[in-house]
Length: 250
Image (cartoon, rainbow, N blue to C red; front, side):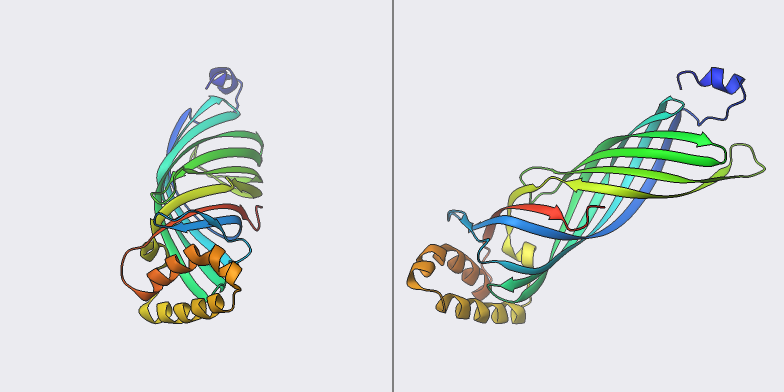
């Protein structure tokens, strides 16, 4: 890195200028959803915030990435990442009918980041910023995420020069883009069993029958789309828009 030779001549140990790594990560997060609009086929989008009630929405995300990084300065690192992500989202729907289903999505992720690090031997301190875009077929635009973290720890030195072990602890803050929109085959999104479909259809019919005539007129496109999916094996396209946020961003 820049100024690297001067520091090495003065006896400082600094990292090699280039590096490559393979990383894996797993996270489980509860999500909050608002401003939900849905439509089926060619029907108009209908706001359903006052209708749909979720008992819980939990996302399990696995990521596998390759990272190339370089030290521009002895304390400043930049990196690029690319890889695959797999998200399994468990949705527990309370209204208009009770149903539990899983949404399974796989996407491609790319991103970049920077690290500021200092060593006060044997103490190690670092701050990290990462921005990533994940491309999922069912979404119209890539999902973006920003992560900021701080870590501190202890460096254990081995007899072989250049072979050390750093044990770090810290905290992360994660922010995801709130707006999402897309379309997908209902069967791929929900994947409810035939028994589950019948149970959900019974609950949907009971809910719709209890509505007033005016409410039924407004919500008829939603009822028709859901009942068509639940009562047959014919493909039904779901269109959706919503805002999301993490229940625990830290």
